[in-house]
Amino acid sequence: ERSTTQKAIIRVIPLKVEPIVLEGEFASVAEVTPAEGKLLQSHPLSLCNTSEDEHTESGFITIVKLEQPDRDPNPCLSLANKAKLAGERGARAILFDITDDESAADQLRKPRGLSQPVVLIRGHDAELLMGVVNKNREAHVKIEVKEQPAWPDYD
Amino acid sequence: VHPNVSQGCQGGCATCSDYNGCLSCKPRLFFVLERIGMKQIGVCLSSCPSGYYGTRYPDINKCAKCKADCDTCFTRNFCTKCKSGFYLHSGKCLEKCPDGLEANNHTMECTSIVH
Image (cartoon, rainbow over all chains, first blue to last red; front, side, top):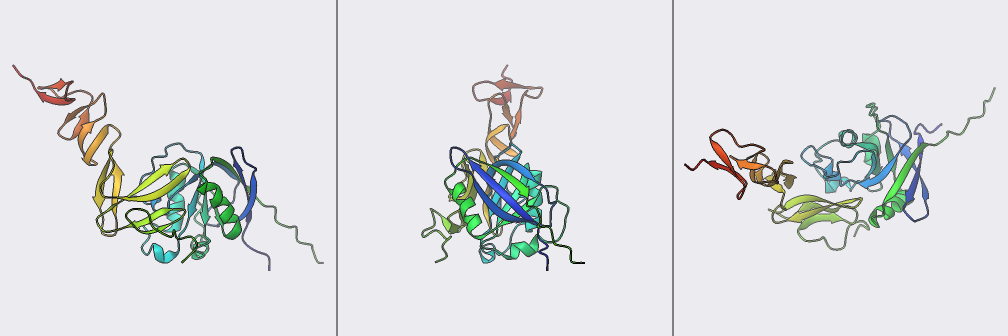
């Protein structure tokens, strides 16, 4: 059965350090489209209507490390609305590290036509990306749509 | 212990994680988002930093920014000290004092005209 999720190639280009190439998957809540920009972390609670983010420049790509669901029992917004809010605040794309919250994939499956792509990343790829964040290294990110393997035609 | 949960939460966190810092605060403390370079972490403070005011919600106490023309405020709409170039009048920051009042460049407030 052909996988329905569209894979994403995530190129992370930190300053003065070797680039790394990771893989994620586009969430169908948003358009499947390439994007690039400066990497910026957002705390999960920053994507609430009652929160502000001093960062005013736009054109960045935000990474949100989702915590286990029981650690945020009543989230301020749904993940789809958090992604929408991030886009309204200038994010060109939203990366969600869902290693600790696999339910996020289901929450972001329903198409909402958000114009900024939403990419889910997990496991080792997410660990590498968060490693860049943890070292607080400025980095540029390019998100590309991974070519789907051409299915052989059986006549 | 979950690998991602910091061994010890900083300061006044009730719950925290290595990547996001504080996720919730101990009672009465204020949750503040702090941006350090490209990172953004949660911290818990006993009072809001200058330029912010505190709001208590049922599930969280948060610090939010004063208005752009205000340096320190009590609430979003009640400024206590304006940024330079503005005069304080009734909790508002004005570029020009209303008629009948004069701009006191020492206190940066609008005051009654002394005859």
